[in-house]
Image 1 (cartoon, rainbow, N blue to C red):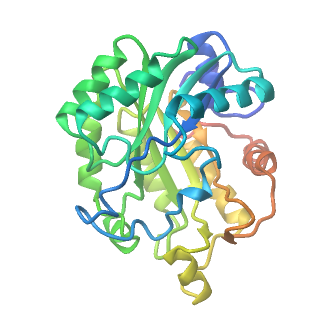
Image 2: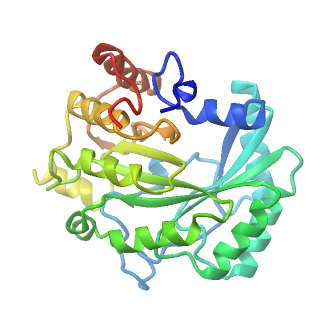
Length: 309
């Protein structure tokens, strides 16, 4: 274990610190909406999307496909320059499935983002079942000159859970996607959610073991939360979805961190949604309070990321 990667105060390898070590300056991710759809919505894999999915719950209001990509980028960069003093940027293609289009369109969109002199790379949010060989080849081409990260949504490694949440893919497809991307100069981030109905208590330990065994560069973890207009919200109001208590989630997040290698950067440790659409859980904690509730539990335990690997 390389303790030099562990942030002294946070007790884990934060993605912000990882980026600063890599680029020698402050880097921010700028979200954009390039107008993609999703195979789990248009019928090719399913309809209706995942039971928890509402892109408004995690996307800035000024990121819509009607606004030109360059305008979205400029506004996002200006915000992060003023708020954080950021010097360089990664453009994050976030909403829906951002490799689900003809490769010619992907080349145009990614190329426009990378053409900006202050952009050091791109991060592509996508699904394991939506990565053609041509798309991976394109990303590998861009990765020769820029930072490229593919953010793969796994969410759960339990196929029964994936089916119950209408995810539209299985664990085998995720593993195949990781295998096809790895070794090509492309970073891999895995998205995970904890607290699904029917999920076993020790599922977080099992998924930590899976991540530990794979060439994953970073992870995003957050609690399952329901927002208005989703099927998960309906399940909550019907009493069929009981969200985790804050203490349960914090304990699970720490269990996970303790069991994944320090080389894996942590991009996210919690999820949030605007108050106007948030249904449950209602922990009423600000983002920094949620972040430090995990940090403080690690300190209380006297542990850190990777200490049980």
